[in-house]
Length: 313
Image 1 (tube, rainbow, N blue to C red):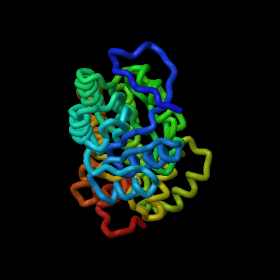
Image 2 (cartoon, rainbow, N blue to C red):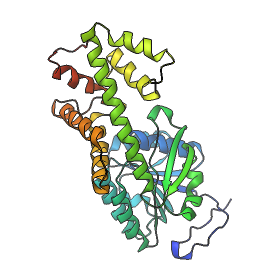
Image 3 (cartoon, rainbow, N blue to C red):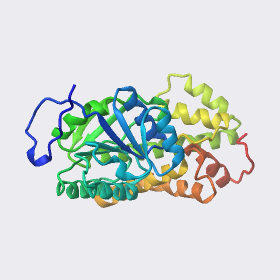
Image 4 (spheres, rainbow, N blue to C red):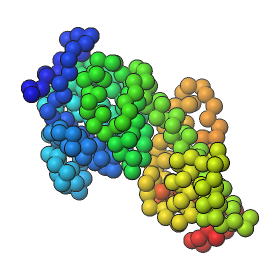
């Protein structure tokens, strides 16, 4: 099957048949990026995977992707997906991609970034005939393949890249113009931060009242209580078992929540709970918990209560 040649935004008709490109570029092969690369390879795409870290490139090679040590290695890929730590990296990588002799025709940012950065980059991209879509991931690494991907941007390029997104997401939802998906993701991250803090607070308090974290967790999670959520199941279990290996680190939690609080400030909205929780998140950073799982916030509550030591009981 001969792949369709992508047309630039100025040339793009309202609707036409889509044949997926044979090569997809991915910039950023960390935890989520590697899962995206793996899914695309399994779906039959030729994937060129860029990451400055040689371990990440080796991991991409091991699943069948072509590793690139320079961003220029993605030149000629009609579609490039970004999976990067945050807005600064997204801005830098996108700017470099747009300066390539053969820039991408569609850039899809799956990172958690801020909508203002996304809109600015989309505006810059139009000057070289490139579309930008924001398509962050809703889902934990363990649920890869069952993720939901909200998408912000024009429906025409979304129609072209939808099969690519469906290689790693069970649901692809067009949520509005450029920036809308990053807005939605940051609102979700506000909920994450609040639930994370509430779980930590309760499981730090429970042993002071004679209830072990494990007993509380096992009793509540097996009940029909309305408070039981997927996130409580995961965080509560980690705290009860004393396992703070990172699924989503304190550093990433702080980064996302900072972006969310700033987004709320710009909109003139109140983010009272989120702002309060963020003070505790930053305190966890200051106490050396940056690389631990977000559930390690339980130790901030424990220490604020005057308890010390490595266990909660």
